[in-house]
Length: 408
Image 1 (cartoon, rainbow, N blue to C red):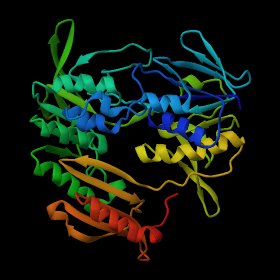
Image 2 (image 1 turned 180 degrees about the vertical axis):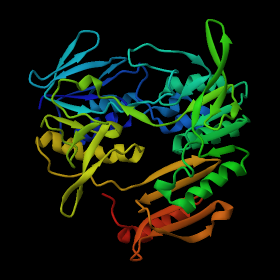
Image 3 (image 1 turned 90 degrees about the vertical axis):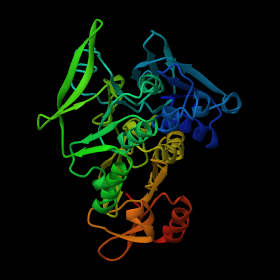
Image 4 (image 1 turned 30 degrees about the horizontal axis):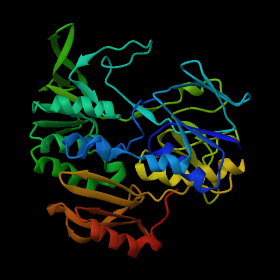
């Protein structure tokens, strides 16, 4: 291959660029990103950056020395419009074309919005002031500016992003209500016992937690030429007053630009277990990749991983297979992720099953500082977890790693 283009400039894209060079690719390496900002790290957006303890420079994924070492050709603020694999060309929205021999799809996704507050099917945008999502640096800048007045905040979605935003807003002194339609958010990931502990931690810090409640609509008032949110109406007709609403209900993978390319795209770009698509010159990594999951008897399903760690783990696999033109190695996620909430780090390695038993190894759930292991019906460790105990978690992870069932 003479030219490889990486489409997407977040951690998955920059990780793929580094992996290609590590794998020995010495040709032209192009990185295309639709944001004008230099490549940056997303996890701090909901934490230190939103809180004001980190600046834009702290988020940088590449410095000038990195760019020089990678011999990276950057095209930022540039949207890719289409891929023509037969001609070996990427079409850019400004009319330019790039001749390529290989492509890494790392376009991630965009934040889902509440109906009537964002992009509609015909491409129009309805602006409701005070309603925010948090996916990009610009999103974080806008939300951070809105939080300076210490407004009443309603966070819709109590997954990890919503939980982190709620934590940060409380740390800034904002009154916060955390909503989720699930009776016990995070239970599918952490199990009921630990998920309940996480919900109680919100209440410990003064967050108004309302689970099992969905959003029926927004209350707004005229504001200039538009409207501004004043409250969130729930499915039981309760209205929660709000000056700022933050929506954290997942992402939609960015695959529209691949229409007509021959790639299968449904809730992501479909790949095999080695992150190879149906086209041998195209791989996908990061939030946009929906990869085959391999079991003892072959493919048992597909999965998308929206964690920072997974994006990095996928890079070396995708790079090796792209340069080989076929699948030589497969992606086996470590199952590790972390989340910072209320000054405590939650860490998990492995993947607990829905019926696994939680055994506390050190500390106490009631104190919100503990480590634990997950055990299946046979007593086998499937995962380890720590809350507020990073060192103890590290020791437990090292001790149990050989016995932790590797997630598919």
